[in-house]
Length: 151
Image 1 (cartoon, rainbow, N blue to C red):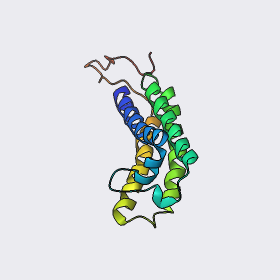
Image 2: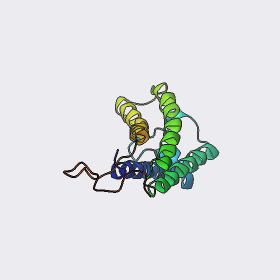
Image 3: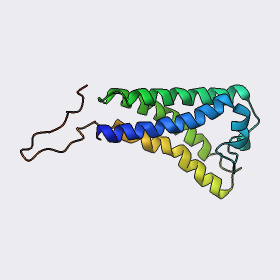
Image 4: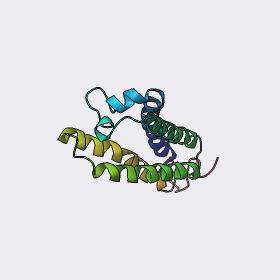
């Protein structure tokens, strides 16, 4: 994976975490009633409102978003690997829970929820791959760009 591709994946994760995080942390009742947007309500379908729990989900997602943003600043693999692992550890059981609780959603929302909850996993798994230089080899086979892992 090139450093540019890695940064793009990390920034998408930043956006996902910030969207969920800011909404849930700042406006927990609205998040419970309206997430993921104005035409649906995935959270309310799963149980009664709990401000503490919704705010915890928000701040947890904000933490992942900030960690992902910080990881974009590094050329080496380490910070992105740590952030990717955190996203996967969080997202796999979250997706697993919702796969077993799709009964209260209509078909469109069920499919959308599976895609939305699977997206962080799909974005994070490539971040586990080694980082390579983003510029191709020159005619002599010598790398013409900065090697991966160089600050």
